Image (cartoon, rainbow, N blue to C red; front, side, top):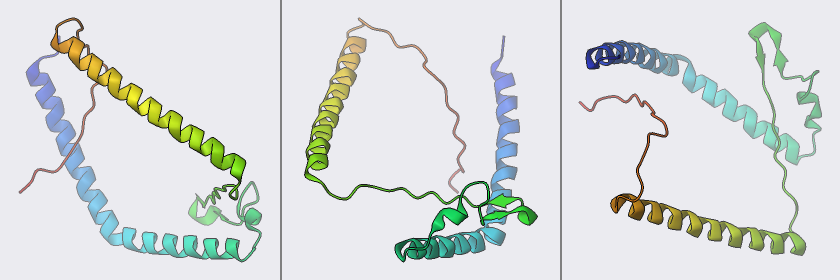
Length: 140
């Protein structure tokens, strides 16, 4: 059986590991993150402009992508998400979907409320569905 002291020791090890990781990440971000974010933003801006201007971006995707840089072991993936132009048939369907989503939201609220009532009355029990760990810095 796992003891409280064993969990504490594992927690201490995980906290030390998190601290080292977080400090390293902060140092990495300070040293390289700013430039990376800036150059990524510049590239995204210019790819967007090029697409609007009609440049064929297919040369930057697929097996022969011009954005494959073996020297840096890097492949920049360009994902273009498209949406249809406005159309009355689509607008009607979108309204129907919105109504169904609102109906679903109400059904979920009713389920939550009924669950809480049954638990409060002792007619239903709760079991552990999952356990999640979150690491955060302590306030100073």
